[in-house]
Length: 346
Image (tube, rainbow, N blue to C red; front, top):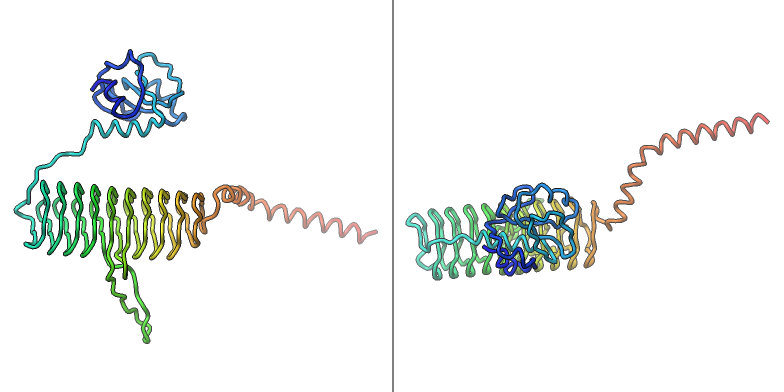
């Protein structure tokens, strides 16, 4: 593909003298080979440009690149442009429609056009599958599930009864959608009585769900993952939770029951959200933060319990000096004793 064509498809600008260069792929600064395009978005890695073998590079609109042999594509967001280039060179893998003879599909299930169902997958009663859906081998779909167009479900996934899956959803290996919420009531003998989980899970369009992630059905009502949300591997979403549009939940995040995560929220690794907590739109939680109270829109918090990030780092700076306090106290006590003795001697 010519550089000029790639620039048009990725929203970048190029020098007219470079437009005829052939680009065959995209890779990182250290991995790129001749014929490939790379990117620089963080100035910290500028020195690596000098040793990169790439033929072209995405940079910011004002970046200065000293290498005359390196074609430059300027973009407002080089990382975004590079991501689009990766999609150009690595489009979604095509597949042939059909149902493998080793799949088990209930007679009442309905599938759309150009759908693939792999070997040993089990499709339950009254399941509705949209067009161009790809269900890999060893997937289990319980009764009454609905799956939208162009969705891909990888091996080992289980989708429990009544769950609704939107269009263009990707569910990675061994994720579980619609398992029972963790709800129990203590009876008169102090035994745990299971609360029936009769709600459902709704996954809206363009959601991606990572490997081994679990999303519990609601006890009543629904658990909902809204449009465009991205869930990493090993995320736990409790019963009756709501995850907002374009929210990003990184690995090992846990949401307790009935918590609500707003639009465009970023929960980094191992963040824990307490039950019935609301995290406002555009908030960011640093890794391993524990959240026992509501978070206002746009707040950036860290720690357990989580509090404002600049205050946290000030507290950490003080904490590092606490080890000196006993020594200073002993020195003050010694001086005080000396003063008292000198006054007593007068």
